Image (cartoon, rainbow, N blue to C red; front, side, top):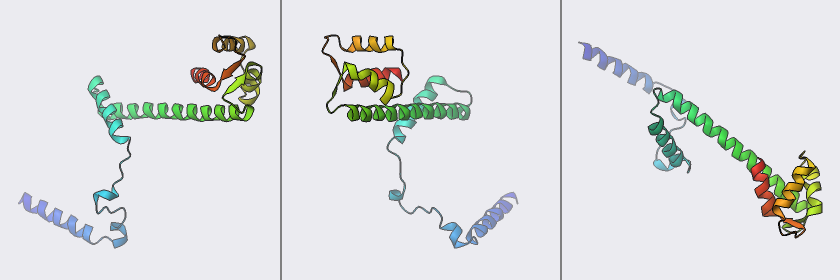
Length: 152
């Protein structure tokens, strides 16, 4: 008797689904595998998440997963900010000089005015001494980007 009522409930559910308007049923319908778009980073993200789950052995997987993905999102946001700031640095560098080298005399104005950094002068002098060990009189873009990356 119980299976019959279960069958009848399933039949009613099926009939209710069949009577839904066509516009409701056509939303996001997938007909083939080509319509499914998997982001290229998803397998790597899931692999890292799986490793973290095995490492931590969380008692509540949902809470752990929520925290893990939120932390990952913060890291991505920090990387975006760094990338935007490095882009800004390169553009300002190109605007100030036509080559990949900058004179030591221009470095202070570049940092203080172009990038609007408030750095003590003695620290700027230390940076100049660190990068210009051969006393060439100029700094290269790679050196400035490396220093800038450590400051972020």
